[in-house]
Length: 181
Ligand code: HEC
Ligand code: HEC
Ligand code: HEC
Ligand code: HEC
Image (cartoon, rainbow, N blue to C red; front, side):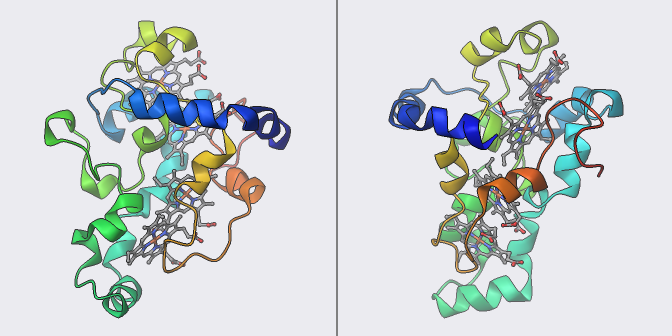
């Protein structure tokens, strides 16, 4: 994985430029992805996400710990503040007309990383990587991607080890090779 990141580095600028001019697509929410991505024999990506840290990203803004840190920054309710929601939810900054089933409670959901699924979720499209990509699918394997949220703009940031982080959230590769949820 580390090697793959290195080869991609020179393309980072290009990737970000493309992302900023990308066409907009409707979201569908993790429940739509679950319909096809919760089977053990094909990797149970949904189960791994649900058991992992990103599905709890909105919830954890409601803890006492979060509230205390927010108050110190002059923020009354972190679950309502853009300063926190921008990295802790998928819905932040999305025009409500594109939401279609995506909820605030999902936190950092599938579509935060893979792009809004409203046009790529159908089997005929999903099975074909190139076709899915032209319908909004993203395979976020450039290093800067994780760092766009994992940085010191969070009051709880404590460094980020990309290799360890990738291992923790791993839900790809042949089934059986990835961590059990
Ligand atoms: C109707 C079933 C279905 C739904 C719904 C669905 N997928 Fe898929 N997805 C598939 C199939 C089939 C594949 C191809 C798997 C294979 O060939 O091994 C796939 C592949 C993928 C891949 C890997 C693509 C690649 O080429 O490497 C990603 C990422 C993915 N899906 C994400 C999502 C996300 C995110 C959602 C929800 C927005 C979603 N899928 C909804 C059926 C579905
Ligand atoms: C949209 C913002 C966002 C992106 C992009 C993102 N994360 Fe996260 N990540 C979060 C948030 C928010 C949390 C904290 C969840 C919580 O509230 O406990 C988190 C937590 C984690 C954790 C558990 C805490 C820790 O630091 O060990 C790991 C591991 C992790 N992410 C890995 C990754 C990896 C690997 C990538 C890139 C493939 C990535 N994340 C991309 C927002 C993001
Ligand atoms: C730049 C993106 C970003 C912003 C902005 C952000 N966070 Fe985070 N937050 C993260 C990531 C990524 C993590 C994962 C933990 C890490 O980095 O070690 C996290 C983790 C957390 C955690 C879990 C910490 C733990 O150790 O259990 C809490 C609570 C939290 N953030 C609260 C907040 C609050 C409150 C705000 C707003 C004042 C905020 N965050 C703003 C990205 C962000
Ligand atoms: C924090 C970002 C992040 C989140 C959230 C996330 N993924 Fe992924 N996903 C990745 C990365 C990174 C890869 C590996 C991409 C690569 O290497 O090409 C990946 C790969 C995949 C693959 C390819 C599997 C394979 O075997 O090749 C599927 C399918 C997938 N994700 C589905 C999902 C689904 C469904 C959800 C939500 C339930 C989800 N992902 C949530 C970052 C994420």
